[in-house]
Length: 328
Image 1: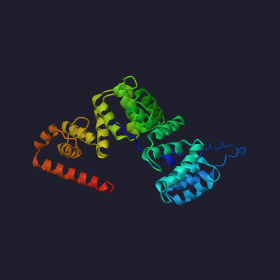
Image 2 (image 1 turned 90 degrees about the horizontal axis):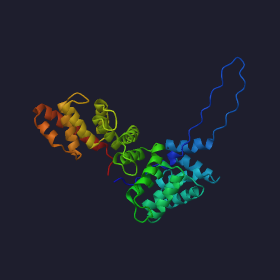
Image 3 (image 1 turned 135 degrees about the horizontal axis):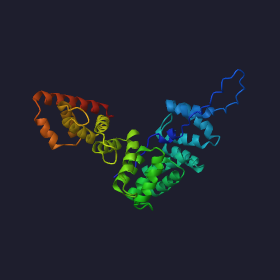
Image 4 (image 1 turned 60 degrees about the vertical axis):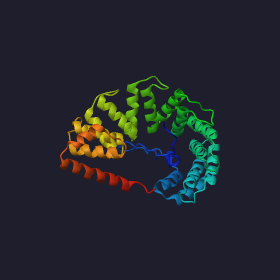
């Protein structure tokens, strides 16, 4: 079952504004003077630019100055800086205070942040009922992550809130977030179409959304889309494209993709057969919990040189991945 997750720094990043582009005047012998372009707000460049560069003290100073001018975006930025302890000591109470000021002016990012504070019990006890209300408010203002998280609540049904399990409402909310480009929502919506929950079962639509989520980097979607491609289920059959996608997901650490890749390399479908690589990926998948008796039997029939090469390569890959994991 999918669970709520918090997108680190999504609030501040969602506020980033792109500088407008202006068309160049046509080149003529005597060009008329072009109309003056509206000046970009330097405050936006300074505050958000500083945040993105990691110059948090500068962002803090600019946000503080703008908050004194009653700027809700600056208030939300201050909330984020205090919530994350960036440029200032972490202080959930101050973060919540700034978020509430910004939320009072209708800032959807601040409302979403307050919802997460309620679910996580920051700046007070956990309050899922208030958290759900805030998610609903942020979702109505078009916040993609809020719509996705609220959809998860309806998907499961949530104790302590008025939200009962409702697949139809979940599908509507996932669609809202998916249309806004949220890859987790795209994957969730694809799953509902695949299973026919909350929406009519439609494998073609399921694969369309699965493909979009895959392109956006959702690893579960990559695996399911590759399975669909390999089998021609809901999408045109393309074993070579599926094999490439399995390889990407396998390298990113998906045991399921590693297992499917090992089978492809064993059979030589979608890419050339390679017994050593097949055994290597089988060993890696097995270490991740995706055992496979057929591949065990295949590995046992390989020459000692192939088995040794595969074990050496698998151990190297596993040790490299372990070294890249953050210290716990």
